Length: 255
Ligand SMILES: [Zn+2]
Image (cartoon, rainbow, N blue to C red; front, side, top):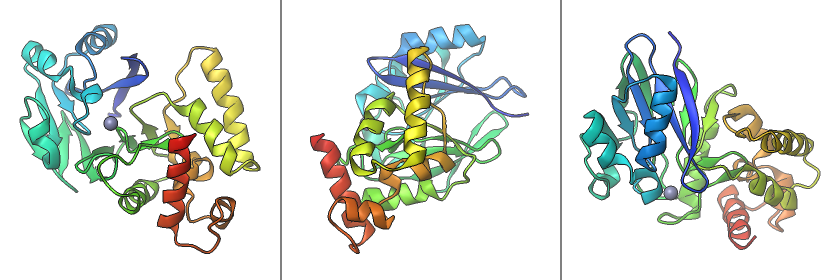
C-alpha cells in the first residue's frame, strides 16, 4: 500500500511532515521541530507516532524529540555522524542504510554540507524524498559546517533521483528562493512559470511543497551549476561546477 503523508507548518517557517504506513499503522515524523504541532497533526490524521526520523542536529529540527518520545515511546532514528548532538537517539544510520516505518522502507542518503552529518530519507517505492535542510524548493541549505564543493556533490546525489520524486524540505522558502534564482536566470521560462504557480499557492494559503525533482532540475539554480548559461551569468564561464555553485551560494548569502 502506498505511503500517506501529512504536511503541516511549525515554528516560524518550518515544515513538519508525517509519513504513514496504512498497512501497519506505523507513522513517522520527519524531524521534530516542536512537539505540539506534531501532536496536533497526528490527531488530525488519526495516526499514532511510532518513529521520528531525524535529518540533522539543528534545534529547529530536534527540539520536539524528547517530549514526543516520552509520550509515544517512539523510536528515534538519526544520522550516525551527529547522533551525539541529537537527544534520545535509538538507532544510528549512515549512507545506504535502510530504515523501516512499518512495511515502508527508506534509503539513507548522506549529504554533508549544511551540517557534516546531514542525511535524507528516500522512500523508493513511493518516490518520496525528505531532504531536511539540504535541498529546498528552488534553493538549498546554507553551507554551514561543510564546504561548497561538498554541498555540490551532495546535491548531485539528490539530483540523480527520479524526476517524479516528490521533494519535501524543512522550510517554506520557495518564494524568496525564486526571487533570488531570477537574478541568475532571468530568462528561465520554467522558473517564471513556477513563480506564477507559487504566488497562487501562497495567496491561497497552500504550501509550495512537495515539488517534483524533475521540475527542480529545470528551475532550481543550485542544481544547475553545470549549466553553461548559469556559469556565464555569474562570470564563471567554463569554470568547474563546484566553483560556479560556490559563487551562486555566496551570492544567495548576501541577497
Ligand atoms: Zn538546519
